[in-house]
Image (cartoon, rainbow, N blue to C red; front, side, top):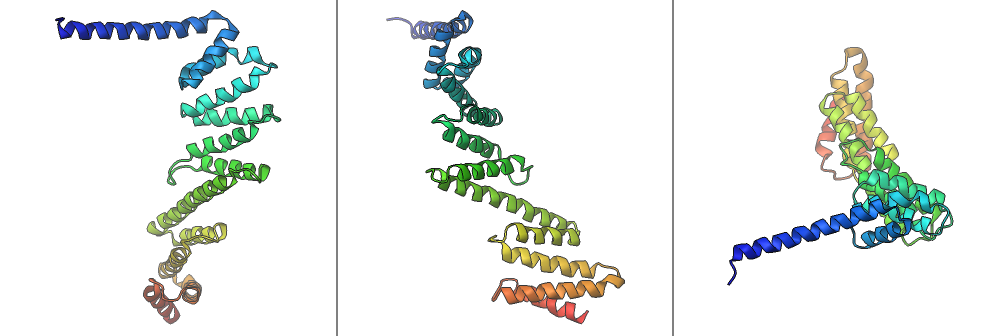
Length: 264
């Protein structure tokens, strides 16, 4: 009976040879200069989900197929290789280019959706810069306007709502940050803008409560000459809150602010 160690070594050698063979095949095709062979192998790698290899080969032949029927398919799959490799910035760029280049393509609708969805994948946590969130919202809205009967419209609207909620949270947290830093006037402006930009917000009660607190604390910490005006503003904000919300969890504190502002 053969020594198991030798058997294991033999298996490893075979695997190493197979890997070397695969690698040499890819290198041989890449260096062949045969456009048709490269095209067919790139498609084969794409179907096998070997997207890095497919991308490398597509790059070699894109210019050679310009003006030919295969060019559309190559460019479309090329864009998708970036998406599957999680290179979303380049994916969005190439899907956009595909849509603008092949305006009559049956794949144009999908490419327009993927432009938006690639930007959506770039959208970070609410604490970071929201440039790509805004880009994704714009692209999804453009898709909905361009393809109002598409089966993807409902998905686009859900994703838009999701990202708007992220933007809203960023604004709210910015207001709280100003509040914690005792920049009460800035906090008030941020919270008021939130209510203007997101009138359907689910956090309206808490946002208005923060406006009341900010107005009251601004009055408390103001110079004497400005206190009368600012206590009046705090009282008005408290009045509006109590008129809008019945049995609020913040009733006791807002009532106290209202009473004290009236006395002052």
